[in-house]
Image 1 (tube, rainbow, N blue to C red):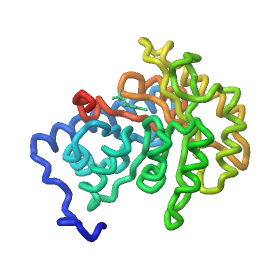
Image 2: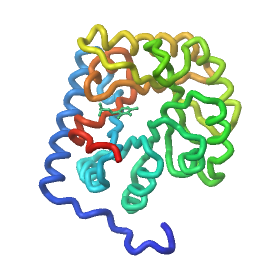
Image 3: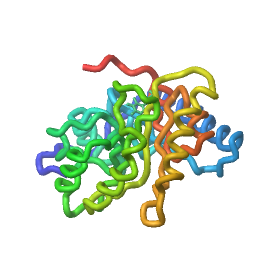
Image 4: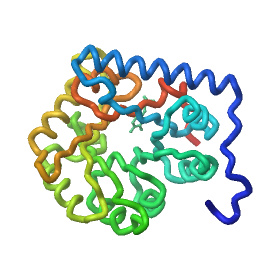
Length: 247
Ligand SMILES: *Cc1c(COP(=O)(O)O)cnc(C)c1O
């Protein structure tokens, strides 16, 4: 807590906000639970990451009041401001955006997890800049499962070596793989890139680096992701409603 802090209190959440977010969270939890049953997954094996990018801190406080502790943010500066406003709450922060070299220090210090690592230069910076008093930074390596040149993520053929190089840096704890496929309609089409991530994990996991985490699935395709073994689904719109336009 900074010396200049005026108050450690979390934002006051209006009742209507609290109820709206609690109801939406309940619906998303029910979707996850239904998908776990439908696709033979163990109950409780899929973790919900609430993606709060571009949403105000008060909505995060509302979600916390409804039992949600893990939040995903995409813009480092915006996230730091909200983290400061919410520092009274024991929240877990996941960075899920595109990493910029000039933001790695803030990300290494301010987040528990980074999804979307796919550049060794960023990995080195995050490892060097992770504060000594914090444990290793948990990371997921982003894989391009759609084969489009414009999408971020590593070519699947590069992933095994990259995972090994990240793990060798010491201050990164490589938890698994992440993907953000192009949107598609229909369960079968949505499952394809998630199946590719799952089978890549099966091929490259080792006893030393078992890569237990598959971070995949968003509001529109969470069922497909659960069907293919997601352990973390990253859900924004279905929890918080439509995002306000990015600044
Ligand atoms: C915004 C975002 C999400 C959440 O998307 P929704 O469709 O709102 O659920 C998930 N993952 C990443 C990487 C994102 O940027």
